[in-house]
Length: 362
Image 1: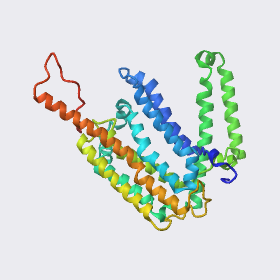
Image 2: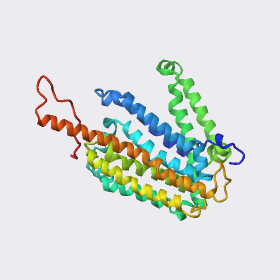
Image 3: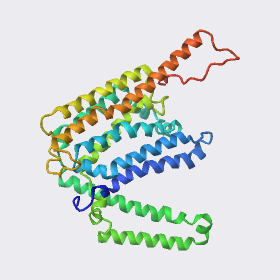
Image 4: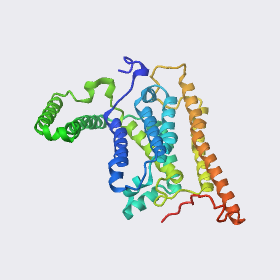
């Protein structure tokens, strides 16, 4: 199937992955619109935050649906590392920057939920989970392993269920609302008949197998379930890892002070550099997954591994270095503020500028 489709056209819209991308976006804008107006009327929409969230999710979609995903799974370790960079150090911080605190805080109202999120986002725990996950998944036996037939079958069944579920949702919830309230009142019976016809058609197509993933070919090609799990764990542990720096709910999951944040980020560069160096200086290819794949873009098999190691060693550290620089200037700003405050430079005619205090746990 891969050979019959040009690589630059090999987008893969596997239903489970598409749902995992679409659902958070729909929930975000639903919370930003109707829920905000109903429960948080005093909160304003921060367009900058919306921009961060949209860019983060768009880049995540590129990493998971575009030809980069196909090349990463079947052709090049370098593409896998580029995908890893999106999942770990580009998309998570953008998404966290785009989440307003009022939207996230209600999810952690209970004392148990608060204790769990504080434990998982504690700097030592988040750092350990993130780096342990990265190293474990790059062990050759696990990286090269494939799922058994049962797991692949279950994954395919879930994909089929997502397709049918999405179509039923469109028939039951979206279709009756397309005409607006006025038309819904005038043609309620017609709308009901259309919805019933859509549901009957979905049931018949499901029974005939027309909505099964294999019938769609490479467009809905199911992933190796282990690969899907690896992707989810990369992204999930990365979200936890960035929380001590960019937590949108510092009153629940505290942020580190700038100096501690700089140390946290600096230490984070070391495990990635070590793994990158190991891949770069290995004398032989470590992974068998790509052994039988055609060589593309002028790479040799060992050269691909070396370039992948360099990608993890250098480019993946760039967002961390940028974060360290921002934290450094925040620390300088705070030091200057405290020195000027102690010197009595501020009074009623020249008030002190607002400065966000370092967050503390409740």
